[in-house]
Every structure is written in structure tokens, then in C-alpha cells.
Image (cartoon, rainbow, N blue to C red; front, side, top):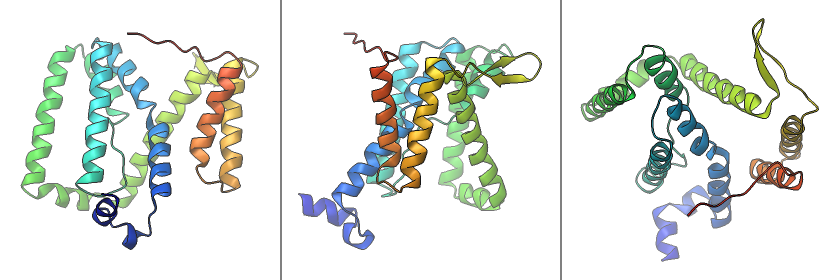
Amino acid sequence: MRARVERYFEFSNLRASWRTEILGGVTTFVTMAYIIFVNPTILHDAGMPLGAVTAATCLCAGVASILMGVVAKYPLALAPGMGLNAYFAYTVVKGMGIAWQTALAAVFCSGLLFLLLTAAGLRQRIIMAIPQSLYAAVATGIGLFIAVVGLKNSGLVVASQETLVKLGNLHAPSCLLALFGLGLTSVLLAWRVPGSLLLGILGTTAMASATGQVHWSFHA
């Protein structure tokens, strides 16, 4: 069984190993697990049931990532896109006053259109026509958006009427924890320690637990 899996995923051609693949998979999951909490929170602001969107987020990410690995054999994890969810909740639903059920139907129709474009072979042509600079700009924009969410949730930046955002209270426990996590991860990356991101996340979680900033609860 193990040999068949290695042949299917071309371990020898890619010089892969079980240790590398498992470490990469765990690191990727822990790194992108924020989507389990952020995406439902944003959609819940639009009036959608929190439990339902949480389950949908997990199912979409899980099924899409498995298909990407098993069918496409490509080392990418997929999850609901950040940015579009904020546009859906705050611009379309809350800003334009459109019911979330109606907006969700529009999202479904757009998904069908994308599927038709892919089946007709037009999607690849459209992608090839997009400048590489725009790809870089989109990736940078999403990264900055996620960074702002993290800075806000940690308290490193807070709202300001004069400048939109300003520096938060750096003596607050949440700010100190965020700075500790950033420093730890940066040092590990600079030292080229294998699994730096994963170790940084685990180390920050351990520090949060030790300082009483994490409260575990289980619901049946």
C-alpha cells in the first residue's frame, strides 16, 4: 500500500519523503486554519447562521484540498477566499441592503459561469491574458488584508477617527503575545529551522496557554 501511494504521487521523481510531506501538510493546515474562524465571523455579520457557515467553510476547504492533492497532484491547499467574503458581507449585503439569501444565489450563479468557462476552455485563455503584475498585486492585497485582520485582533492597531487606524496599547497581554509570536517565527525563519511557521504557531499557542490567554471549551 505504501509503495503504491509513493508511485502514485511520484515520490522518487520529486525526491519527496513521508516526513517532508506530513510536515508540509501539518504546517499548511495550521497556517491556514484561521479561515475556520475568520470566514464564518465575516459571513455571520451578514446575517448567515454561524454554525452553518463554519461547517460549510470546513467542508469546502477539506474537499477542495483533497481533490487538489489526489486528482491534480499539486501541493496546494484551497479554502474560501479572503476579500470576496468581506465584499459579500459588508458591500453587497450590509452596504447595498441585499438579503444574504439573494446574494448567495448570485454567488452560486457566478460559480456556474466559471464552471462553464472552464469546460469551454475559455478560463485558461482569460488567465493567460491577465498581466503577471496583477497576479502579484492580488496576492499582495490579500496578504495585507489578512495582516490587518491579525493586527486588529491582536490589538496592535485600533480604530481611529483621524487616521483610520493607530497604534494600540503595546503593554496589553494580547499585543505582547502577538509580538512574541512574530519575533519567535522571524528568528526561526532566519535560522532556517525546518517547520519554522509550525513551530512559531505552536510556540505562540503554548505561551498564550501559559499566560492564561487561551481558554479551552468543548461543546457536545
